[in-house]
Length: 115
Length: 111
Image (cartoon, rainbow over all chains, first blue to last red):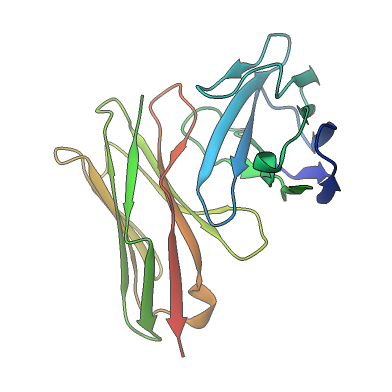
C-alpha cells in the first residue's frame, strides 16, 4: 500500500498566476501519475512522472502548461501555469506501488478555483 | 488508445436492492479492470478488481464479472446500504499503460 500526502488541499488563484501542487509518498515508487477531475466528471490522466526522466504527457496536455518535477522516488510536483478559469478543477496524484496492473492509490486531491 | 464507456451515469436503488453498473472497453490488449469508489470530497479507493484470466470475482456484497469476448465488465452490489452511496468508476489498462477511467456512476441508495 501507499499513503500519499498532497498539498495544498484547495486554493483560489488569480488568472494568469501559477500554482504548484506537491505529492509526498510514504514509500519509494517508480511510477507516479497526475490526474485532473473536473466537477462531477471522471479522472483524466495529465501525465506520467518517472524519476530521472521527462514526464510523459497525454494528448491535450503540454509541458509548458503543466510542468512536472520528479526529483526522487517519493516526491513529485505539478505546476498549473498561466491559469485561466478553465483550469478550475481537482488535481490528484496517484501511485501504483505494486507495479502495473495493481492497486492505484490517490492523494486527497487539490481543489483549484481560478478567478 | 483505450476508451472506457460506463453506464448508467446515475442510479437510484432502494436500500436492500441490488445495483449493477456496466462498462465496455475498446482495447483488446487490456487485461486489468479495477473499480473505484469515490465518496463526496474524498479520494478514489479501490473496491474490487479483476484480471483477464478470471471471469468473476466476489468480495462479500460486491462482485465483478468480465466478458473478454464482448469487452465488457460489470459491478454488482447486493443488499445495498446507504453507505454504498458514492460515485463508482470503472477502469481498464493493459500490461504497461496507465488506467483509463469511465465517466462514473453516481449511486444513491434510498433508505
